[in-house]
Length: 358
Ligand code: H2U
Ligand code: ZN
Figure 1: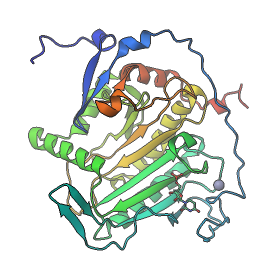
Figure 2 (figure 1 turned 90 degrees about the horizontal axis):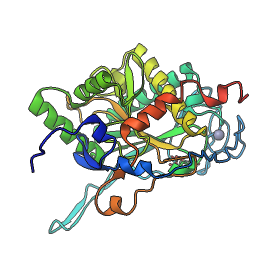
Figure 3 (figure 1 turned 90 degrees about the vertical axis):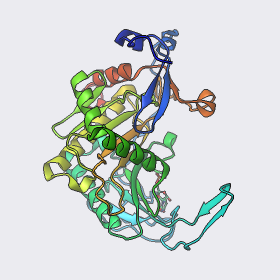
């Protein structure tokens, strides 16, 4: 079916429509008229327990022992260790199985690490100083490079689960790195889209997308000279964001020193706005997508991060991916433009730094 005319900007805020995600090459259903349902606008705050700077029972705090018996050093900045409960191990047999294309399996090798962002148990990215965040960026870049140098590693996934709602096992600021011998699903899908776009248009999908977003500004949340964060046009989670480098590069170690500082700055800007939205430590899963570690040049890759936060209307009302989303396709009510406007409106200063919140 060929559409008779172009959807107007006001129609995009009022009528049910579907939007295309060019990275995943799938559709999301948007139902903005449903947000006209009565809503009292009440913001329910969940009790946020303040954390001590050091917790004797924390397996990530300096000097404490972990579950496997190893003891953490008195680390002054960041600390990386091999996960004591790794989902993947480096020694996997070279073996696979294929029965009629129906029973298919391959042994999978990998390396899993944990990165502590700070010795302080009570800090989070929005509450860390820029110099501390720069140290985290440097560790991420070093880890990618050293893991990518291992011949059998193909992909390196850096991700952070923040908050119990997202399955984080511990409030101590940390992330995980899983590096493995095959491209995982999400990276493979993005890889195919980036490659096809570059093949067809001789241009980068994410460079072109960022150019549009910086011109239109309606989905822009925050930016600095090297990075921009937008609620992507095709966002599924209510306050999902996409963080893009302004320069076309495929991995974090390609960033200049100044750009590394600015990566720390944009992480802080964005997560501060997230915390300000409902005045709670905002839960999310975030992950960086960098070029595959297969020793090919991959000029189509563009460094970015996805933030997938589950909260919808308040600190306690979350979106569930159930029903229609399980059986048909993802769906959202609040538009990407409305979500971006709310994230812009909350302001750049962290709510805990306001004078009313000593
Ligand atoms: P999450 O909070 O995202 O679950 O990350 C914590 C990781 O820390 C988790 O993968 C590991 C878990 O396996 N861990 C250790 O390696 N050692 C421990 O003593 C406890 C938890
Ligand atoms: Zn701790």
